[in-house]
Length: 271
Image (cartoon, rainbow, N blue to C red; front, top):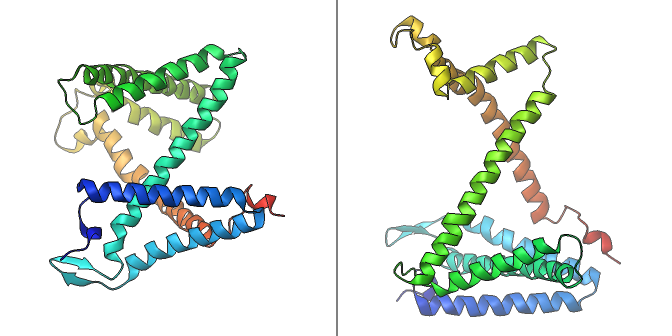
């Protein structure tokens, strides 16, 4: 008989058991953190961080064996419930963030501080999305509240995000135009490459070289082909080198966090 740890998350009973147990663990740890002195808080955080990282690393590196068509090791059955608990902790931290925002905006709204109308808009949007989201639980598209949720999310939030990022793109372009100065040969090459790449993605740039043949030697000088060549053969190697450096740095930072070598504001409060 399989253990409940191997059951899919769709099993409602086991899923709610995970929620209850994970919530109890999180609340207990939070209450314990509030009652401990700073030095003991430090040791508790270091211990939890090390154990969590050690479990993940050990499960990944432990040799596996084939069981029912799956590669497993002794820690594999506990991987899914542990990840469920971590997701619950993440949800709780998001909830704490919402509570913190509510406290900050509620204080500003009660005291009628400058910008209180923005705080009012925050509470209206928060309550509207919460009510609509919980009312259409289960995804029934024929429910009236589901249509309200669809209007709030796809009709309002998605469009506001698109408008914000569109304005941000124009702002970045204008800032680059004001800040960029062609003073060296390298800067001139960079500007020409950027111009070719941008022209290769718009219809106006493609029409500039549309008179060139689509096959043969001269086809390489068409704007869309020049843009693709710059992106694939010049930009990609440099981009991959940067990504490798970033990943190495992320690995080093992860090791520092796992071994508690990174010191932040909390550890500076140690007495």
